[in-house]
Length: 561
Image 1 (tube, rainbow, N blue to C red):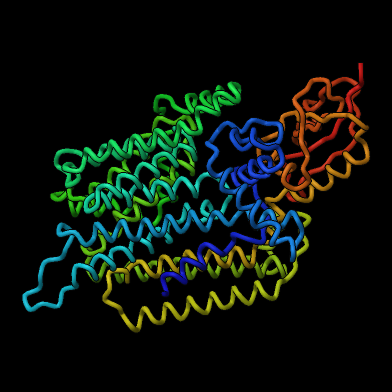
Image 2: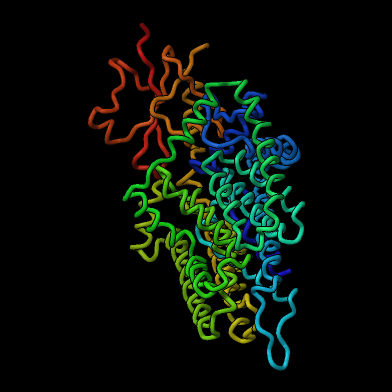
C-alpha cells in the first residue's frame, strides 16, 4: 500500500491544472485536438492544424483524442471547455504509467523468483522464500524507476515518450513471461512491438525490435522458446500494416515525409554526438546507472542468466541505436530507464550493509538540500530575500506577479513533514528488506517534484506557457484580419504553432497569397534589420511571452500586388 501511494503521488503531481509547455507536450495535445476537429484524415495522419506532423506514429493521437471525446464533456460541468480538454488529454498518462509500473514490477518479480538470482541458503535457515525474494527485488526495481531523475517530467507530458516507455516495459514483461508461459508472452510481445512502432516509428521501435532477438541466444534460458517469436513477429507486422496501408493510400505526401524523417534521423556516429550522449546520459539515468553497471560486474559469471541478460539487452540496444541517431536526446535516453532500474535492483543483494547505509545518508543529504533549495527559492520569489537569489529569479520571471496559494503551500508543507518522518523512520527502524537502499532516493525525488509543482507551478506556467501571448495574437487578428483573409507563418516553430492552435484555435496557412504574416523572430534581428521581410510591410502587432528575451512575434500585413 505505501508503494501504491508513492506511485499515485508521483504521477498525479504536476499532471493536471497546468498549461501545456513546448515542444513535445503541446505538440502531442495539438494533434489530438486537430483529430477531433478535422476528422479521419487527422486521425490517420497526425496533424497540427494545417501542418503535417510526420515525426511519430498515430497511437498517442488516437488514445488522447478518444479520452478528450469521452471525458471533456464531463469536466466541462465544473471548468471551461479548454481546461476540460487539457484535463482529459492527460488521463492517458495514467494508463501509460500503470503499464510501466505494472510491467516493471511483475517482469522483475518473474525474474527474481527464478533459481539463478536466489540467495544461498543460510546454515540455520531464515533466508527469504522464493516468492518473498522476488517481491523484494520487484519492489526495489519499482522504487528505482520512480527515483530515475530524467523521466519524471517526461512521464507527465502529452507526448509519445510515456507511451514508448510503457511499451518497452511491456515488451520486457512479455519476454520474462515467455520463460513460463510462452504463448501469452509471445502475444503480449507482439502487441508491445506493434504499439511501439505506431507510437514513434522506427526511431522508437528499432531499439526494442533489436533487443528482442538478442535475448533469444543459444546460451539464454529463452532459447527453447525461440519458435514462439513467430507469433510476436506476425502480430506486430499486422498491427503496423493496419495503419500503414490506409495511411499510404490516403496521403503519399504525409507518408513520404514520415519516411524522410525516419531515414534522415539515422547516420554514422560522430564525435560531438557521442560526447553529448556521454555527458547527458549519466544525469538522465541517475541514480540507477552505477548500480546497473555494478550488477553486470557482480553477476558477470552469470551473464546469460535471464535476470541479467534480458534487461542488459533492453539497455544495450537503445544505447547502440542512439549512437547512430543524428540528434539523440531525452526521448531516446528514456528507453534506457526501465532496464537500468531492473539491473540496478539485482545489484542490491550484492551490496554490503555499510554501502547501503552510505547511500541512504547520501540520499538524505542530497534530497534534503534539494528540498531546502526549492523552499528557499520560493521564499526569495515571494519575499525578495535573500536579495541575490531573488534578483536571479526575477531575471528569469520578468513581469511575473507572485502570489501565494494556501492549498499548494499546505501540500508542500505536508510533503516536507512526510520526508522528515520518513528519514526518522529509516534511521530508527533500520529495515532489513532489500528495498531499504532505494526507498529514500525514490521518496526524495518524488518530494522534490511535489515541491516544484506546488510552489513553483504558477511561475513555471508563466515562463513556459504561450497562453497569454496567444490570447494577445487572437485579439490582434480579430481587430485586423479582414473577411476571407488568410494568415501564414514565417519561421514559426512547431511548439509555437501547436500552442496557438491549442489555446485559441489559430491556424496558419502555407499559401504565398496570404497578405497577413505571423513572423517569429528575435529582438536582435529586429534591431539589426534582419527581421525585415518585405518592403513596406506594416507591423500590426508585436508581442512575446513576458519572461522571454529571445523570442518575438510580429503580425505583418504585406502590400497587395
